[in-house]
Image (cartoon, rainbow, N blue to C red):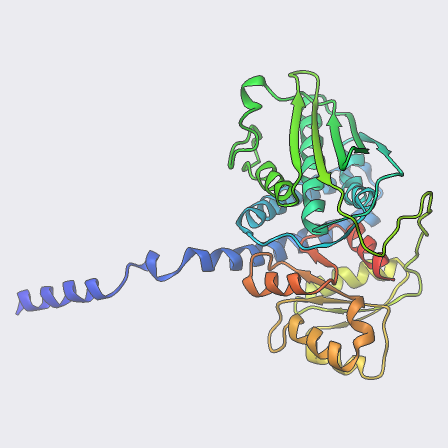
Length: 377
């Protein structure tokens, strides 16, 4: 009897897969990224709101450190997500000078806290081109963030230079810093996956950046000497934009959010509170909804200047919400901004490749959100 029992147990073990094989790691990672991004968004958001009220300089310093540490954590998550993404770049009109200014605006609070000056030398003759705005922006953020970290670890304060110019049929972007530079033995390794000299890094930022530039038929190279800083040079081809001309000397109009009406849709109460609190401080009139069905009811007899909508929600997703708006209220569809922590989900990625609506990935800086809203007003 005992032999039969043992034999039956062995047979069952053969039929049942080991616990580690039952869950596909590839399916777990997107969910993990989604959950972590939502938590980082809350940490950074609440810290930013508290920072606005803080007058004690020492306490403000601690809050800045909390924001920076959470931001570093979220950057690691984004680096993993970018490395895992294998989507082709989208073709859209790109104003590289404007993109650089937006990237610097997003990093401005951290650069000020780190006492790092930014010197911009952006050529007004840079033509419009085509590319994937979000992916190029992430390359710029990676390089600016790397420069900031290098300077901070080297001598605490310093400078970053960002330049653009046209060289033959190429647009050249140069980002330099006066940090420690890169040791000669590491120059050939810095673009390798998972190579890093930073304590908190995982070595994917430069790898994904180089991949992005290659996808755009461009090049990226580095010049560096130990003790004398580093310079990263990006070249991108000039791709003619049909029917679009850039006006020389055109001045950007400073838009205000004061009096603008916005609807924020998200199933996370903390996110709703954070975003509405910030936007109301900026002078907006904000309504919120915890699900897409409620939002559709609100939109039946009200109009808004912009809508911020989460992608992943129970019952009705942001994607379904968009499709209904496209059918019933098409005048609003281009004023929808999608927010998401689901940066690896196949459905989310496929949807973002089909629409031109702006997206903000959780966690985001409030300054970034403000610039995105201004871009659609």
